[in-house]
Image 1 (cartoon, rainbow, N blue to C red):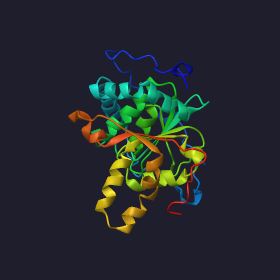
Image 2 (cartoon, rainbow, N blue to C red):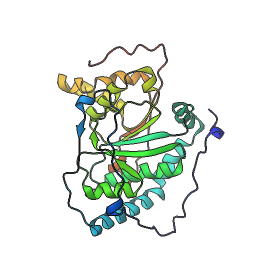
Image 3 (cartoon, rainbow, N blue to C red):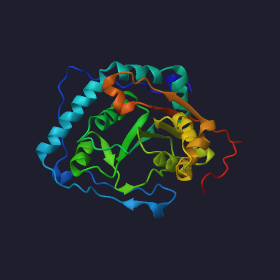
Length: 279
């Protein structure tokens, strides 16, 4: 698909402008709605934050941390290198092939971690938010991690994200084009995602940003434990179907947040034999 068929980049904000911090009003918060979206609904678990202690000062402090991280990332050589990687004609074609006739792809973030306690999760979330701002073909952002606190949930919503009320265990089916944003998740979560989408039509609707599958394959020679091998069956089986593009994390500021991460595109022909794996 030609690049002109989509609006590639949204208007860039002036980095010298001050941030306007707006937090959700307590009496008019967005309602979280569980979604019926996984192939094994019996394995879904209703979820609510364990840490329910919050106050305006705590939320404001976290929002300020996030805004600083967003500015840091958006103005960094790391991000501009990653942006150049996305904007090559070959890689744009890969994104647009997943989009098909759809206007945008929803983003789902799994395993984010605590954005209140640690900078790497804040940088990871910042990248997701900035990518959405830059590209009109990235749609709504949904987030889940079982350790998210009420403070973090409110700040995530103020930043334009939705927090899921159901623990999907990574088993979201790509019933439409989807970008799964999963840097530094456990191998089991990637395997769950692939297992839930182990069909030609579903895999072709996925872009995955996360750990290197090639690295998982190389590591398997070190493991003799059948449990470890079993938890990665779909990862290993997908290697022949996956185009993996690593990202440059030479900068010390962003190494902890993104080392070993990259883009994964699944090119699965209709004649492909996706025999059952780990079923």
